[in-house]
Length: 267
Ligand SMILES: [Zn+2]
Image (cartoon, rainbow, N blue to C red; front, side):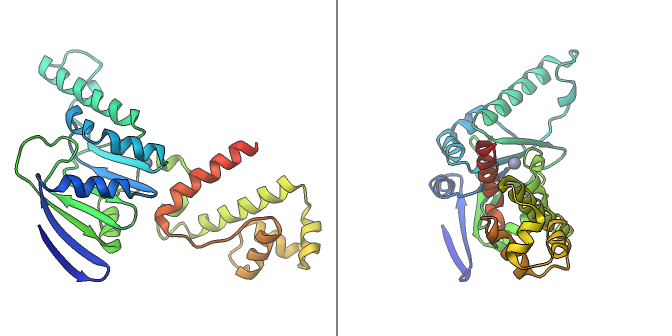
């Protein structure tokens, strides 16, 4: 195993098919918010090796997004008329997807992908030749990077922020697409403020007078105007029991989930 420190933030290690497992399992155990797998192929046997890790991710509410290659003839699999060999292969693939979903994974089918990657939060990137969710008995090479820069590069290059299920979430969409979603982010803050004020049953006039600001200023805050001073937004938030925070990007899906559960409980 080679251990190279490029500088404090970037550590690199090289593994092979015999040595990677304990390190990868340890990384999965330490995942806080999101894990992304990209692997072209799936087998039940390889997925089963991750059973405990995946169940633990699900129980800890860590998102698991898996990108796999869409097999040939996938869309015709239920139509009949395919050679038996193809049908059997597609059936196995379907069972593998079901197994992943039963562990809470978001499974995304993509045409032609062949890269093999695992990303843990915003910090760890595994890449190399090993097809982690279908590997059986070949010699392989795997790199483990502890590098925010490498993770960001891989997400951008392979469009790994495009998970179909995650994309149904407003927060995920607003915070995962850079940089054109600046207005979206402001809109979300404004939406939360309006929601909190309505839930407290306070009128705009009342809140503005309490904060000694004009009603027009409060209107600008609530309509998501870009010209509002940050200090005003912070004060409006505080008056409604909200906090404005700058958090690491990778925890956003987790926070969004938490906020959603709180809202569901309250409604
Ligand atoms: Zn996802």
